[in-house]
Image 1 (cartoon, rainbow, N blue to C red):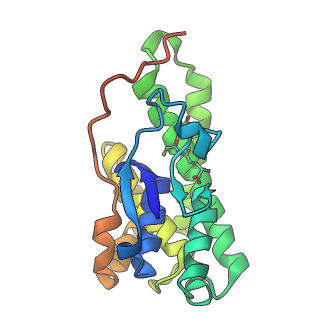
Image 2: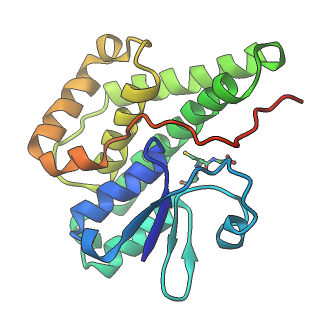
Image 3: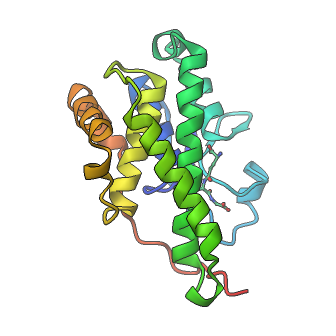
Length: 208
Ligand SMILES: N[C@@H](CCC(=O)N[C@@H](CS)C(=O)NCC(=O)O)C(=O)O
C-alpha cells in the first residue's frame, strides 16, 4: 500500500501514528506529495485533491479518519484503539476541526499575499482553534494508546511546527502536560510527529 502525504500535514501525521500503533509500517510505503502541486493524476485518486490518500491494491481511500479506521480494522486493532467509539469519534472530530482551522490559517498566511487576506475570516479560524484548545485543556485525557489520543498528539506536533510563536504551551498547560506524558508513554510516536519541510517549487500562490 502507498500513503500519499506530506511531512508537515497534521492529517497525514495522524494516519502515520495509526500505522505505527498498528505495526503496519512494513506494509505501507510513504510517498511524499504536496497537495498544491498542479497534478491532475492525483485527483484521480482523490477528486478533492487532498492528502492523505491510501492507495491499496484495488482502491484509493480518503479521508484521514476513513484511512485510520481501515488500517485499525485490517490489523485487528480497532477494538483496542477505539474501545468507546463515540468518545473516540467525538474527540477525533474536534481535533479534525482544529486541524482544518489551523491549516486554513497556514494557507491564508503562506499562500495568499497580504493585500488579499481577510482579517475577519482569519479571526474566525483562530477563534475556533483557541476555543477548541481551551475545551481540550479542561478535558480529562488519559495517556492510553487510543485513536483519539493519537489524533490529538499528532495535531499538537503540527502546532509545534507551524504555530511555535503562539504561546499555546503556556496558555494550555494541562493539555501540553498531557502531550508530554503521552509522548513519553509511547516513544515510537516520535516518528509520526509533524516535520517542517520545504514546500516544493512550482506551487503558485493565490494571487487572485
Ligand atoms: N478531512 C481531510 C482533510 C485533509 C486536508 O485538509 N489536507 C490538506 C493538507 S494538511 C490538503 O490536502 N489541502 C489541500 C487543499 O485544501 O486543496 C482529512 O481528514 O483527510
